[in-house]
Image (cartoon, rainbow, N blue to C red; front, side):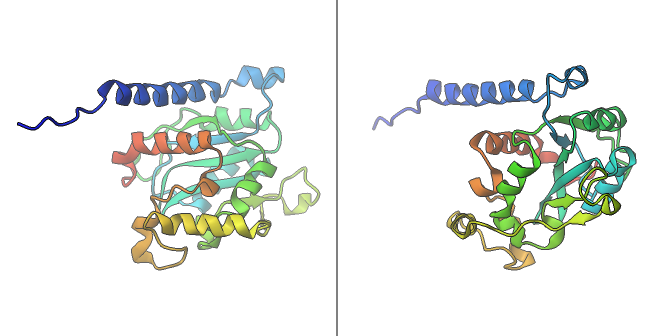
Length: 240
């Protein structure tokens, strides 16, 4: 009877443990501590809002955030599942001042959403990529900017910005400044058997699995999002 090579179970297990350990460290590091914000020892401004009911769209999420934080944030990205046009359960929001996060955490953190009969509870942590400038650089050369408007990240004028009378209104997103990165972002989707942006709605279920580093940002950011999606895959297509 021929002998077949046995899989290196220990190596596979070690790889899983290493990934889990890295994600655990990242999760602890990204915990939002209101006390640290007040003391000025944590000055991060970009948060990841999780457990969003899947039927919430970008306009509705903006209204919810505006209840406590109107004019206090300049970036929002609600990630959408191209296959069913629903969000995948999380969003990124950048606040102008770290102290502005406190009101939002007090209003939304660990609270039920009370919409679409959802029993989900909002969770808030820091994002890996921080600050408006870094977020703009992450997305301006991403193929997601070639999608329909409601799929894209958004910028907003703020109450203490240069044009306060426009606070809360959408600010134009900067155009791509690196065509090579944009090209590679689009080609990456094609390389893994996907389709170019705007190729048709019936191909959206394939596009949702894209893993472009230009869409995801740093390796740690990609891991953060991938681990979160994997853990919540059974729930992503339901509103409850």
